[in-house]
Amino acid sequence: MSEIGLVEIFSMAEAIALIGTLFVILYFSRKQMQSLSLDIETKVLNDLNERMHAITTVGIERPDLVKVLNKANISPEIEFAYNILFTFAHVFHMRQRKVLRDYEWIGWVRGIKSTFERGTIMDIWKSNVSMEWFDPAFREFINTEIVPVSIKKQ
Image (cartoon, rainbow, N blue to C red):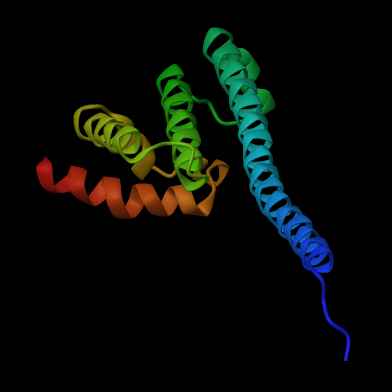
């Protein structure tokens, strides 16, 4: 039987330490890649939201161009409401992606509820004029968490 010397023990410990270090590096680099992926997706969503905002702004400034998107005669109030709703939808998506913290989200939800309670946006939402522009998750959020609360307070 051969004996393991002190040098061999140190060599094995060094190899185990290197392998352990590689696992730690891989774990944290994977976490960093997930965070980077979320940042890129958030940037893309922000860019798309800015484009939608620009399109809506043009529609408010030049109502004759809205017919490119919708042949119906849409008032500037409805166009402005859609701009607000798209902003709310964007905030909702940032919450889904865990970009907004709890206290920020609570503030936004209060603002959304207040808008639905005090303004005419509730009537525009209920009229279902082109609500297909909003994704089902956002529509469900508005219909289950915002609209019932706003109706109770009126």
